[in-house]
Image: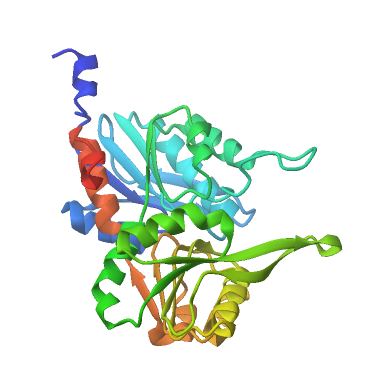
Length: 329
């Protein structure tokens, strides 16, 4: 078999899995799913705030995956990812895949004002230039970001993990309804509700004149006397969540469950969530949540791991099998 045919079959040596410093725990779970040992590297942070990476063993000709989320500290985590990608490329890896559970700067996906950047495109370019042959990520804020990459990749969704959680507790819920935090999330919210065979409601927000701040105005749909599942793709400062939950309560909602993929949780998000009348907060580990924050949220917090999902996709990519078959596509 020629080298070209060999590559087309997905034969790149063994799987070598590296953990970025932002996703050590998640990558350990992926390694356990794949039954492989984590490959080791040294990441040194110098006093002048620069980074240095050295692999502890050769990965020449191997199928290499580096898992690194790009949450806070955003620029340090992005630079660590880029430097590691270049290190892997310079050590003659057979194929390098950047696994980025949370893609920062995803909201900077277009020029919505004059003289502004499209930073999501810049980050995509840097990942490619640094040495990635492929990429994997989850639940991008905007679908068009896929077009910013010139390399192939897998853009996955963890919403089926959340629907799996709710499908188990639905029998104990009171006439449940899905509520999206704004109309911009209506399509994904509708798909989530359809998967659970539930009705849907929406929060309408508008930007108010001089403040240029989005404020919740009204709730479209029926939540009175019902358990409500408030859904979004990520929670940053939790301002939209506070508005949505308060509106739902004002309209007679009973128990309120909050669910989202990316727990960015910039201050004062955790304090806001802790003070809300929420029955449960269900999220994933695309972004690690500090132990102190987990303690503050207490028993309300439920973290569903994406490790089995990423592990299975990595295995299928390594073996040259379809990823779409996992989702009946």
